[in-house]
Image 1: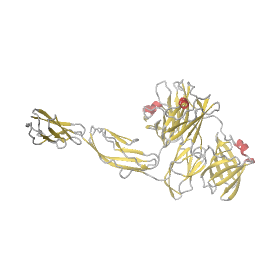
Image 2: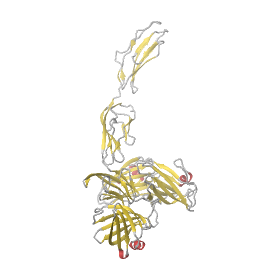
Image 3: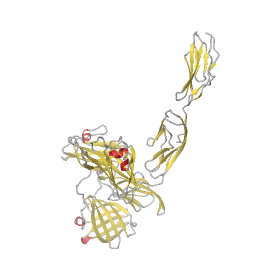
Image 4: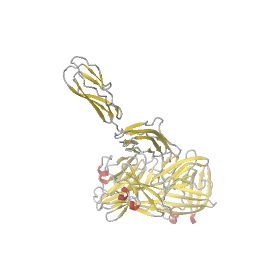
Length: 627
């Protein structure tokens, strides 16, 4: 079973003993114990770790940033996420159902929650995601510095726009600020950067009055965190608000608001109008395929949050439906419903769509376009109330009002994975993952495996002990599902493989031969591999035979000498090269043939040195005299 993934948007690093530092608390919501692995992702998107521990059944643990950086054996924490991290977010992998909580602990022990994020306000038909930050200090507030943390958890760069309105109601005088956040990267912006501009930004808000209200828009789902750090060493997370939402607070409030009014909702099956009536009764009229149907029954309503409620419909014919209503306004929004007892939808199937009070249908401008987005495909993102259809079927993946994904009777908050299961006579391969704030991404709709090109093999390699190798960049694979992971085995002493850059570097420390396997795997375990061989030879020096040396030579000025063939050396690493010095006037040495030729023009005596060198600089020499 593949572990589920939980995220924490910020771990504040430990700097000095009296400085605020991050604290992670993990609660086990199950009656089983299990392994937990914690990885850190820095703001450049680089991943480090893991720090690992065993979480006992129904237990809870706490670790400081210092514990997580280097491990703490006394707490059962091994490994670590590294000591050179700045601000980072955490990924927690475990098979357990856990609740991760992040805090900043001040020097006096005061805790401030760091796990809340700004809820996504909406997404429109152009797939723009919007987040509202209702309070953000101006740069003139020096003792309470606001920080806007923007995290792009996806695999594509995000184009982000930040706009502002101050307490006077005026839009930012300088206009909007735009920036690009690389895939899996993050950026934290201060009010000074937003107001005055920065090298990483385009545009500026300019000066404001009172406080800012910010709107963050992006073409990719983000995690947005609104922080305040005080000069006294305290932090606060202002990502959530206490404002009441548009959903009715209870059944009586819902009855007062909707009795006698038609609530119109649409699904793939047609258009329906639900009319609440006195005594908690309802009538429902449906229009589908040119056929009109009418049903009656009892209804009840309960709030499940400031922006959501659950409507239960008990039909007189015995059917029952429950709909989670998400309220964008007091009279409209999105829904996800699940019915039992009837022929359509099939037992237990979740459906999603728009709803609004009759005569008050929202035009959708600037809001989430609910309902079906058509066929599911890898990379498609869906928000609350949206759905897509698995290719070749009528089965829908949908996101309910609580941000949970549903597909083929599976309901989950983190991930839905189906690997080669036969359902209704069809082999199903499906993966969808929660990106945060109710946004899901389709990761797989077919069984595709990663593969290397036919001619991608690096070829066999020969290296020398003690000589640094030229960087070997191993090839990238194509295909597969999600992010691909690379590995190289076995380990060659002194050489290392970087899984991110796919580069093989280092200096061999031991001679030998290794049969290497370079493998790639995708998120659902499909893989491919290449094989090649590495041979590391000892660091030997070249040498001449004991009797190889040329004897002293005597030549006559003006008379061509007989060609002198100097001996070859043996051994060494790689190709051998030869040199003869010093130069004798009008005699020349050919470094390729090792031949000395020519006609001397001046008398003299020359002590000669003949040198053979190998590829890693080892050498040997012979001496003789020319007169």
